[in-house]
Image 1 (cartoon, helix red, strand yellow):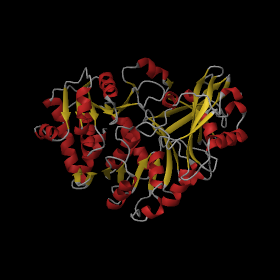
Image 2 (image 1 turned 180 degrees about the horizontal axis):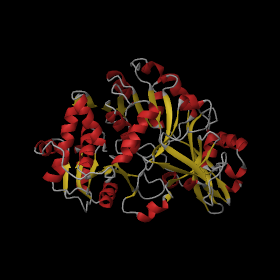
Image 3 (image 1 turned 120 degrees about the horizontal axis):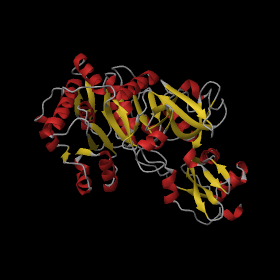
Image 4 (image 1 turned 90 degrees about the horizontal axis):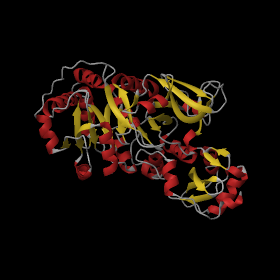
Length: 509
């Protein structure tokens, strides 16, 4: 089984059906299958890259992304996906760590690619004229290779929330199972589906939703760069049925208001999946009012596991605070400090098992072994399961704040701060303190036109939090800093917002 086989199947059944759309360009299933074959033959026969090797893709969302990804993996030259916002050092780190032999780069990123010290890359191919010339000279047939469902499909580098990025390796079978599970869970397994690709394709979740649509015979419409009004325009123009975003995207869409939404037809849009970070309650309420009941659905996942839980509409009122039950085909358990499973209701570390999971970190056997307990992946997230098996997140174990011996979870502080009527979003993290080790530092985003200052917010938190959990500093910001896939990285916040004396000095403890 391979992901490319799904595309080839639809090329035989509906050859002229639209597979990928970007602007005025449309690639049919027949055309996509042809170019998949050319990429595979071109990289092995034309560039001399041996099956079993790796090659990297460094590009923003574009039509070529799909043919490269599927063509390379089908030739057993596993694609390594590099985020389009990567700088010279980050690009070199991923390419060198993965031992990539070829780098396919978008023209807008060529300067960065040329400046990077790429130790293992033997050839840089620039998309556009050079790429099309190379592709046209390659055979379009599928390479005759010994194949297995365990062949590597893709290597996704983690966002590095707890350390240096690592390459998570996924098999063909794992991804086929994941895409089938997405279709089953979200009911998107139909050729009439038209999915808008909003987030970066280098991110596992964005890639999964797009390829799940393609493997069901639907159409992936590419949004190269996010802009809220452009997104609505694409929904209208292409009769989009579903798309996935992060909370920051949704917040920008909500900011357009009713009048802007009214200009665009969203009649066929039935699903907006929100993931990568917690959805602020205020943004969720406004989103539901604009998109309609049942359209906004939350997803919890990770690079290594893919989709973990899905909060459907019917669960949202019945299970407040939950991220949903385990995703289709996923088993969850909560484990205590001694490694023993905990009963329902008790908080511990969340462990997960699924056939769609990664099978290890590239060239990191010790870290791979440490990531698993038997065949369960150790998420490092603190959570509890209720009697029905629904997951309730507490926080990441790595984000715990230690204040003079008191253990504090950032989510506890954030949940209080967003209850203030003028706070739209909040994030809490630990800042170094010479006396207590750490103190709580928080960033908040206010509603448009709101005016409360730090004193008022500190006083509000003091009414609802124990002394040791109260923020010692609350900064008002226009937006919460996130990485390129919409995640809040508390380690980065600690570096960007150092501890400072002020209204919330540690002297108050």
